[in-house]
Amino acid sequence: MRAVPIAVRAIGPLVGIADVLLGCAAAGGASDGSADSGAEVSREASDGSSAADALAENDTQGDEGGLRDGATNPEEASGFNAESDSSSPSDAGLWASVSESGPPAWSGPAVSGSVTVSQTTVAGHLGDGFVGLSYEKSHLTDQYFTGSNDALIAMCRLLGPSVVRIGGNSVDETEWQASAAPAAVSATSSSIGSADVDGLADFLQATGWKVIYGLNLKTATPQTDAAEATYAAGRLGTSLLAFEIGNEPDLYGQTYAVWSANWSAVATAVRGALPGVPLAGPATAGGGVSEAVEFAHDEASRLALLTQHYYRGSGDTTNPTDVVMSQLLSPDPGLVSTLKELSTAATSNNLPDGLRLAEANSFFAHGAPGVSNAFGSALWAIDFLFDNAQNGSGGVNFHGGGAGQDGPSPFLYTPIDEMNGVVTGAAPIFYGMLLVAAGGTGDVLATMAEASDLNFTAYAISLADGSTNVVLDNKDTTNAVQASINIGKAASAASCVFLDGPSLLATSGVTFAGASISPLGAWVPAPAWTLPVTGNVVSILVPPASGALVHVR
Image (cartoon, rainbow, N blue to C red; front, side):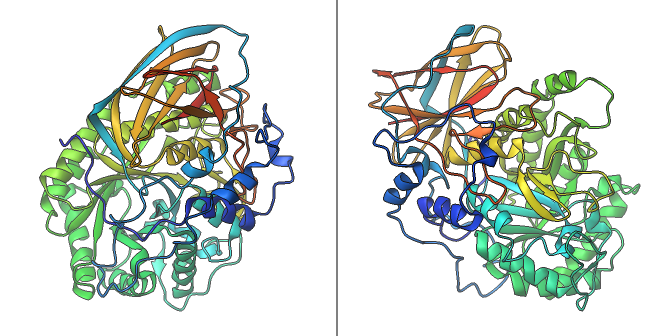
């Protein structure tokens, strides 16, 4: 397996970073403060200016958004732009204003810890679009994905240009009917029409995101799928990353020989209508690794992207929430080996877009109550994303949605909360995703973390400007970690922001960089805290049950 993940095809230029943040605030409206009730610390810039003022002063890049034009065939229209700005969607905004004082003092128990970064050893890579979202295909029909859903657009823009996967169980329960009208808001339909695809295209244009678009393998005919793909490819254009055929075919109750032959028939029909269009799959469930590996070999000539699903376990449990949370925050012994096996299958078969976990989250069956929708899931997401980056995955799509899109139960693990098809806020897990997205793109450096026997992890990202971002994740509920970070080279200055929540089991009151995200997607980070630097070493205290993002120059 390669030390760095497979290169991913390119999307268009990144939107100006400060412009993204200010655009989100404009789209979402100014926060009225109601969403910030759980914030423990409120800060202003030392000169009295607000974080928004600092962002405005930093907005020197202008609006460079928009999608790459001029693609003349589906294959040319797919992927990420390798020449795009490689900085994080939020990175410049976070460090645009720095407080002259250090973080608040901690009076509780603390354990000494050390973090050692190797600037010369690459352990993985975080590329553009690494942190993405996944939704049920039925959600296309209820006017959720449109160019006018300002709250959803604002939430997605916080993560930067990325990838949304449209699929889930409902992909095999919906079928193309070009003339079908969209369902009413809060309702879903089993018919996908051209108007639904038009709305998705407008949403992707507004966010700068790409889509992995699911096609029905189980109940539709190859000819119907080809007709849908033809319309979708023409309408989505450069926003199309790949067509993913089917959802978890290893659970169809069919042998591999049967379902893979059916997949091949759909692929042949789609490619007959759209020569060279990128295809993804097989999107097997977590237990379908061996079939996914075999499939990567059998369909190597037509497959652009190997997709797989992952969940830590089942949400149908009677165990206490603290026990389930402990399970979630404990390392999954099978995750790393699974990622390595799948990434090796992608590289050995020369799949151009490599491996991506196109559907993933904490616990399947829509999540575990009081765990999947609690703050601890944000800390889990940080470790999970870096496990992927360090073991050959090119990205993760966190599954979400609302009741009625895949059965009657709510999606407890959804990153973006919604009610009847309307965005109601950012869930705790979204904050962990945002921290990783804000950490920027670049090589993930080999990093060692020690803090007695605490559940404490650390990761480092080498940025294009020569600076280093370090992510610290303290999952211990009692002890802070007084960490000394040896950055591996001389440091001149360092600052940090924190990911905070009232407790691991809290379902509200979460903040990142001292601010909550409003229900309309507005997030204005407070000034970062200054950290002491001596030579190569940065000192920071990470409170219990919290995360930190440290920027070292």
